[in-house]
Image 1: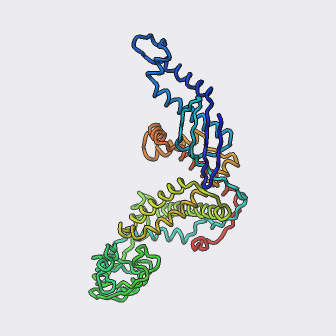
Image 2: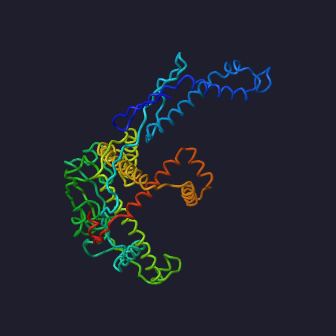
Length: 443
């Protein structure tokens, strides 16, 4: 075969192929022989029909199979000849059966980017200790007590920090009801009845709780707040919204006593000491997960600051759409309305694009490290991984794997496992500096 590859920007290449007439004739003869041996033609014994009869009856199918075989052979030959890392061969274009017996076609290939690896051993990363302190265990148990708290009414005094205020409120902007002024829904900012508000600075909007503190049941108050610049609904950022608040009641949490009875109730019979042990294990698991994520983020940032290369446009568009969909889903789960999401469409796409670029760059860098270090995912590892997932989902492993195979998802799962192995390798060879937990929390 006469094969030429012309590389182009953005990880594309044009493949041009001319298949010699003798190769075309040879492959066609093989296909016709196969049809001759298997075809059932009235008036002829199996395998005895003349080839001209076979060729006439199955002409379309023979040509389609011939084209398919020769295209696949050309792709295989291009991979060997050019040592290409092809992500997608594309659809053959301008395929022609020429008068001289040759077949010609071209295709646009999507190539993996050429990655010049930086030094990936000994990367400096910071991480806090995984040690769990008594104070952390105490805080975990205090959270459990709060989850199982009862609530009693507070009477005879004004609202204080830490109370639970039950309020009704409406809101306005420039003297108009907020949603009327905006011309669209404003979500929870538009107003609520019987709204429970924990009186601390982390509740609702900055400065809101402080202005409710000091009110007594039955009091009303107009609270004017400037909406922060990072607020999800961009139309309100920097604007002053007035909340018309009526305090309907005050409540306080009555926490259960931390004793063996309480521990047994929530664990099915364990003591306080055993509950402390369970809390410690949970904190350790969460700490290790958070620290691992923190290390990985540093590795990703390190690579992306040192290495740059073109990315395939199709992959970038697909990944950007996936990231945008995920951002929208998270926004809706957090209570954002469709109108709020649409108002932020430009920001969502920009954020998704940045994350997509980072994800793809990191993925290709780690794949290249895996190649460099001979890291691979065996068939057994893949099957065992999928069987474990099937077991967790209470599905039949064979059917689960077969469905993934039919959907063409196995290569993607294998690649995810490969990338995971590569990041583990990089972390294993990183230079770790232990730092206070507060330092990582603020970064």
